[in-house]
Every structure is written in structure tokens, then in C-alpha cells.
Length: 290
Image 1 (cartoon, one colour):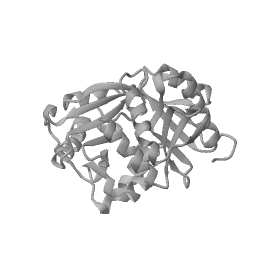
Image 2 (image 1 turned 180 degrees about the vertical axis):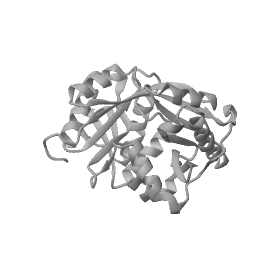
Image 3 (image 1 turned 90 degrees about the vertical axis):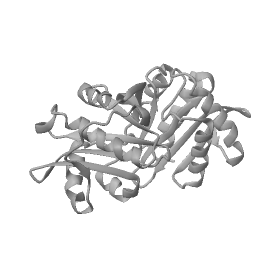
């Protein structure tokens, strides 16, 4: 049975979810640095109208946890910590994946796991989700940062946001974090751009939500400038800003099909830490939302 987890159940939920993070075969994304960080995320989501903290129960026994961010206006939801199943139990993945498919029919819904978590992937596919993204997660600690050139890359000014919006949305045409959503949450993003001939030719946008770790969400370079070192300059600028702001590390998910971007990240000191696979329930499914 799937039912909401209340405040007095957060400790048990955090224990279960944290235990699943021990091996990639049972883990989900995003990965958390500690049990306390995970518990704080659960507490924070319970306070938000967009938050859902759900448990999969066998009688009174908690067997799985699902924490969701739900944007009802845009009909989008995303697992804040994937589906966490006690011992990697395939039955839990199956029940909770089918719950997402049913309760959020008509939504774009995203679940994500390490590539090694085959049971979760199979459950998502069986419930009707499609493979969405395949990448490697890379992390850079401040001590490992190799400071390179970043000349010509500068923070985006407010007066150029409309120009940036056109560049961003062309580079990421099917992405939740489109320019409009970045603009509406502008204080949570660092955006840096490279200009050539008065036009934006490259950009990097980085989240600043987490107190200890920044995350590079995307690096885009126009066709003319690809393969000429601009990717590394954009990454360098983003990391420099993050570390100056007091972040201890930077996370970056790089598509499997972009070896040049991975090479640029490695040049700056990034190292792979995990594989990443996400699955999407398409928003054009039949049925009503919760």
C-alpha cells in the first residue's frame, strides 16, 4: 500500500533511504552526502505545497520511500531521491513505479537511478516509462580544481537575458529548466556566457541551491566554436564562481554521447563518480492526475 509519510515517520524514511545509497545496485538519484542531508530534504519537502513524501507499506512495515517535487501548473513531477526500496526489492520498485504512472497520468514524470540499478530500471519500463537520459555523474572537489583559462566568459547581465533565453531554449528544446523557469528562480542560478561579435556563442548555467555543492546543469556552445577549448573555459568560470561562493564541490552530469565535454571537464579536474539513467513517463498519457 502507498500512503503519505508524516513528520513522525521521517526518521524511519531517512534510515531506509540512506541504507539504499550504500551500493549503486540499490541507490537512486540524486545521491546524498549523509543521512542528515537526506532527512533535511524530506523535512523541507513536507513543508512545501509541491512536496510529496510517500511510503510503500507491507502492513505496518515501511518497505519503500518516494519523495516527489510536483509542479501542478506545468504538470511536471520529479523524484527528489528516486524510489528507495528496502534491500532493492523489485516488488517495491514495481508498486511505486506503477503508482507514479497512475497517480500522475498526464504529467511528465522523471525517475532516476545509477545504471547498475537494474531492478528499478526494469520496473520503470514495465510501468510505461521510456529511457530519457544516459550520462556519467562527475564531481570536482575544490582541492582538485585545475584553474585554466576563462577569458571572455562573463556573468550574464540582466539586460541580455532575453538574448540568452533564445540561445538557451534553442540549445535545450526539451528541458524542464527552460529560460522562463530560470528567470523565475534567477537567484538560484549562476549563468555565464561567452560573446563573439556581440552575440552569445556559449553558456554555462549552474544551480546554487545546495549549501555545499553547486551543480552544472548545462554547457552549450554553438557549432562555430565547438572543439576549440570554449567548453573548458565555460566550466572553469562556473567552478571558479562556485568555489569563491564557498561551495566545497561541483557536480556535473555529462551525456554519454558527448565525449568532448567529458574531456573538457576532466581537464578541469572532474572525475567520474557514478553512472546515471533517468526514465520519463510522457505527459501525453491518458488519464487524470492525482
